[in-house]
Length: 88
Image 1 (tube, rainbow, N blue to C red):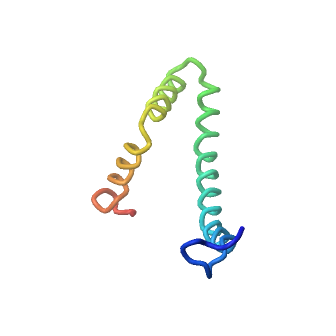
Image 2 (image 1 turned 135 degrees about the vertical axis):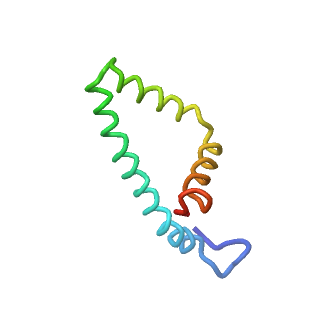
Image 3 (image 1 turned 60 degrees about the horizontal axis):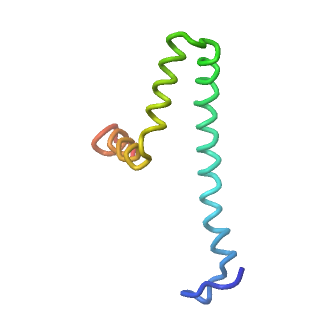
């Protein structure tokens, strides 16, 4: 892939590999978490088709889908951050 323009001593392939070593586990963890949440909720919604649990889940998921990403991120930072649960 060549060398960086700003730092000619750094190979681009090495930099990509270094950053991919951090990004790939994060992406896989987020995929695993998404599947762990989505599959049970989908099963509950399918088994309760047309009843209250299905409607509640559909409403909640439509509301989450309509929420802008930056707004959701701010709310999550408030909930899990130092002033909320203190997990960040």
